[in-house]
Every structure is written in C-alpha cells, then in structure tokens.
Length: 129
Image (cartoon, rainbow, N blue to C red):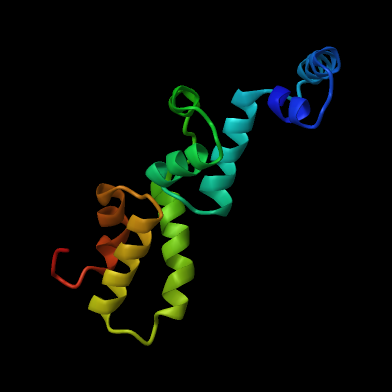
C-alpha cells in the first residue's frame, strides 16, 4: 500500500498517516486477506490444496503466510462437487473417456492423486490411470 500511494505522488507523511489509519481500521490485514482468498479459491473456484496455494502465490501472498493459514476445506468434498457438476455434461461419453477427462480436470485444479482416486473410485472401469 505504501508503494502504491508513493507512486501516486503522495508525501511520506500522508502515506504513513493513511497506512496507520487503515491498519487501525483492520483494512490492511494480510492474514485475513489470505484466509478470504483461500476460501474463495476452494469454494468458488473449486481448487484443490495445491491449486489454492498456487492461486494465493499468484495473488501476491508470501509463502510463509500461505503455509500458516489453516486449510479448513474438505478437499474430497470440493472435488466431489466439481465432478458432480461435470458428470452431467459428460453423460454421452464412454466411461473410460469420462474418467480420463475428470482425472485431468481435477489434476489441473490442484487436487492430489489420492483425492482424485478417492473421488473417481465409484466410476472406476477396472483400469488404473
């Protein structure tokens, strides 16, 4: 915030005062921002744990803060919701093609291989990927 205000041409005193007031009001809380972004990534973007971490890094959250923010989302439940939505559109595909596409989708969204196996096991065609 300091850098942005300084680039806009505000004096150091004005920047310091503004940042102090924002901190007092609770508007500059990196931990709370990281928690909110983690929730958005998991619930709305339907990302797995690895995908959430990558999303937070892209948003500029430092690695130490990412690791310290608790992960309260159930990765399996998030993956199951995503698969449930996608299965409707894939009903015309054969089971093996559907499984491969779902595996790829979940992997790209940052879900672990163990989670993907758990979620896709009810749709298992007898082959392993």
